View (cartoon, rainbow, N blue to C red):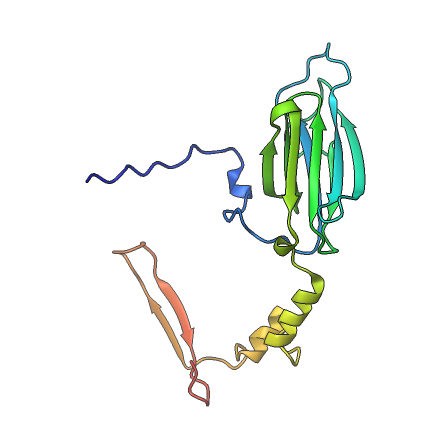
Length: 200
């Protein structure tokens, strides 16, 4: 039986800014939502825009309501559009439902620190609905408990402290340099030390 051909998906502009794992967790932080039309707005189009609702997915209560307008000069790049950008607060570790109702075909972009976490186009009726369940949202208390478990004495709170704790300030026993012209075309510059307890 012939194996099916492996086909890579078509390159998507700016895809290098998106995380590869589409099931990633969300850190406890404030994110940005950008809602943009799929195509340029005609100068003759009136009342082009959207409404955005952020609700608690457990109680259904609305937490935030936003609205926005588009025009023929609206920036359609999610990275540079600052007008149609709204905050999404995930610091409370509560599941949310994001609902967008647009006047025409539109897209939702979920960002943090310039990285694209999620992108979704509108469906029937120019509506977008996206739920973030609580199991995907990390909480501050969980993070604190995790770090307390792996570093109970707070000895690795910074990179410098971590390096000091792991002996990077104690010099080395062996320094090895070798060149590789057969494999990747570059060599290695390695330092090694054996601790008193036998660990390398």
